[in-house]
Length: 68
Image (cartoon, rainbow, N blue to C red; front, side, top):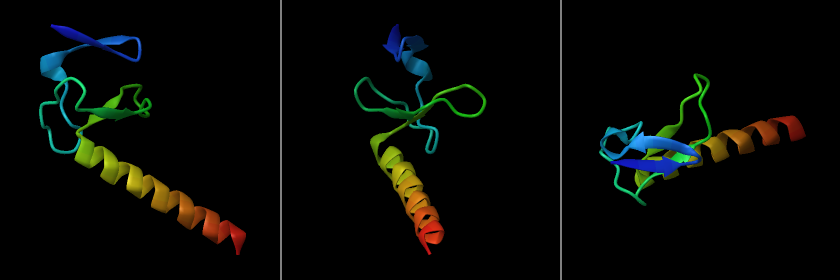
């Protein structure tokens, strides 16, 4: 069986969290835009939130440094 995500098809058995390798179920995943190698990185909800938090902290730190 396949699932369509952002106009691309993936085997359900191939969707794993990029961080913990957990098999992801339909509607229990998130992904970032394409990585540098052109592939999407899928995440379980926990690791998606953690990765987004890191991005926000990094962006705030950069903005703070530039504002000083």
